[in-house]
Amino acid sequence: MRRSFVLGAVWVACCVLCAQGAAGTEGEEAKLESPADMIRTQDPPKVVPRVLEQANPENTSVVVSIGRQRAYLFVGSEAAIDAPVSTGKRRGQTPAGRYTITKKSATYASSRHGDFIDNAGHVVRSGISTRIDAAPSGTVFRPDPVQYHMALGDEGLALHAGRLPGYPASDTSVRLPVDIAPLIFQRVREGTPVKIEE
Image (cartoon, rainbow, N blue to C red; front, side, top):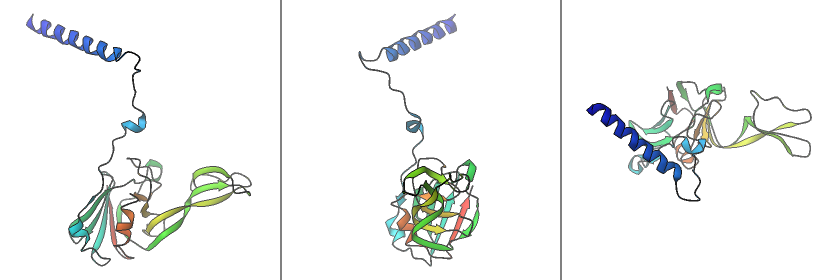
C-alpha cells in the first residue's frame, strides 16, 4: 500500500510539473532547441605559454585524437597546445597512422574543395568536393583557399585552419581552429612527426 501511495504521489507531481511547463508564460511560445544547439560544444583551446615559448621546429610533434576530436602540439613530452579539431566524416574518414609533415603553405589552393563557376564567374554549385561531385556542363572548378596548410604525404591528408562545427565534418583532413593553426604552423617544419590515433 505504501508503495502504491508513493508511486501515485510521483505521478501527480509529474503531471503538475508537465502542466506548468506546457502552460508557460502567457503569450510565450515554447522554444525548441535547434539541431545545431543540441550539438555538444567542444572545450576551447588550451595553450600553455611556458611550454609554447620553448617550442621550435626541431623539438615539436603533433598528435591528433579522432575519438576526442582534439589535436595536441607537444614540445618534447609536454603539451603546449590542446585544441579542438574536426576530422573526416564517415564518407572521408581521417586515416589513423604515423605521418610526417611533407609540405607547408601559409595559403594553399585546395585541389579538392571549392565551387563550380560558369564563364562569367558566377557560382553554379558551391561547397563541392572533386572526389564526389561532377562538374555541370559549361563550368570550371574554382578552388577554396586554405590557410596554414600542412600536408601529410601526397594523398590529400593535411592539417589546416577551418570551420569546426563540433563533430567530424571534414573530407579526410584535420581542421584546426583559425586562431590555433598559425601557432602550430610556425612551430613545425617539413619532417615534424604527426600521429593520428583513434
